[in-house]
Amino acid sequence: MEKLFLFNTLSRQKEEFIPIEDGKAGMYCCGPTVYNFAHIGNLRAYFFEDILKRVLLYNGFKVKHVMNITDVGHLVSDDDEGEDKMEKGANREGKTVWEIAEFYTEAFKSDIAMLNIIPPTIYCKATDFIKEQVEMVKCLDNKGYTYSTNDGVYFDTQKFPEYGKLALLDIEGLEEGKRIAFSDEKKHKTDFALWKFSPKNQKRQMEWESPWGTGFPGWHIECSAMSIKFLGRHFDIHCGGVDHIPIHHTNEIAQAEACTGEKFVNYWLHGEFLIEEKGKMSKSAGEFLRLKTLVDKGYSPLDYRYFLLMTHYRKKIKFSFENLDAARNGFQNLKNKLKEIKGALKDAKEGLSDEATKYRTKFIDSINDDLNIGEGLAILWDVLKSELDANDKINLANEFDRILGLDLAKIEAEQAGDIPSEVIELANKRKEAKAAKDFKLADELRQQIKDKGYELLDKKGGEFDIKPL
Image 1 (cartoon, rainbow, N blue to C red):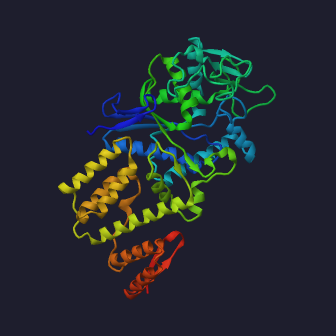
Image 2: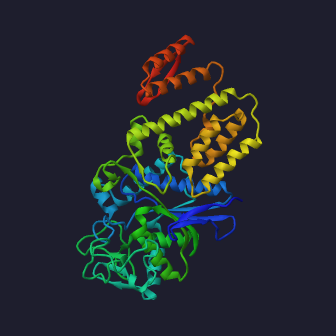
Image 3: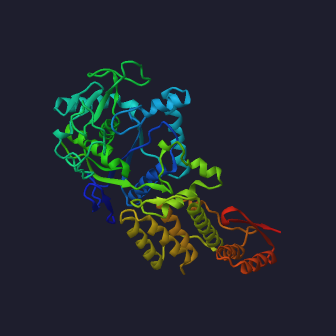
């Protein structure tokens, strides 16, 4: 088995992945809060986790992947104040909270399926595990880590000396209002809610009885309680977006380790934001791009996946339709190249030549270096442009696609009566000529295509169709 190195947020460096149990990897990923559709920025996090899972599987690990569905307790503010996002969504649409949760959970699952994201081994809804969350709060209460206020039960962060180690927080240096609002009842700026009491003047749609009063769990407790239930008190990998580092994941570590007295997670991995001209994509602004928005504009979900493959997960990626067009063109060129190669293949066979094995080794080295998928994609292009025979190229492309997830094996070879590879090559050259504004050459190439008995039809975004005359 090759060595796999991952960047651990906890240590701020790449570390060799050494599982707790040989040959197995336990992985917990923070899932969606199902009060609205996922936007394409949200989906980037699940895409990065999919690459991680595929790399683990490629390296021979048996992966147990757990993802939560937050359907209660996530307030509109991270300072444990404001309306529950689920209740807000229900009020917005005139539906019950349960209906909202079911609808947006299914919408999320549809989105990740369209992106070729392998679903988790286990989905766990917060509302299905209230008992486990209450038990964890009891554990913390019995050990003296909690105190109560008028609005809930809070974790006293001053009683956990290692609080903030993931985010490298300077607790003393935190100014009021910089991280979470400081109320008269909250003892310290960083204290957070474990259990919230229902408002006295209204009945919530989601509320439960507890030793402390009727209410609902805080957002952070669900992930600790459910990850421990399915992966144990100490497991391998925990993932999420970089926005989870300073509060959500910091609080998860504190409550889990305070309760169990053990190390919670060995490797913490975080994906960077997708940004627009105006900054990070956010639902709070009221307008955001869904995957369906891209599809309605004529893009394939795999065009967006190809776009995401071009940037390392720990780097911000700037979204624009111009950048997405470039990715779509690149993906189309890749498919055209594979069609051309498959069309030239005479006798398919398994196995790789010695020269092809060198490319395979380079690819493995890239993906095992903290999931360097952008370099892996570049190596695939090197393969397709190389002097390797068609059999090696196709076998390598199919193997690499176990990580890339672009459905390359489904690209059909050109058969008799299909568009000849030489015509496709002329069309690609014409597209390059048009991009270079060499319109004279573009016209000449169009005529050459016509002379071979085919008509070239230009489409939006530089794409084209080819039809027999």
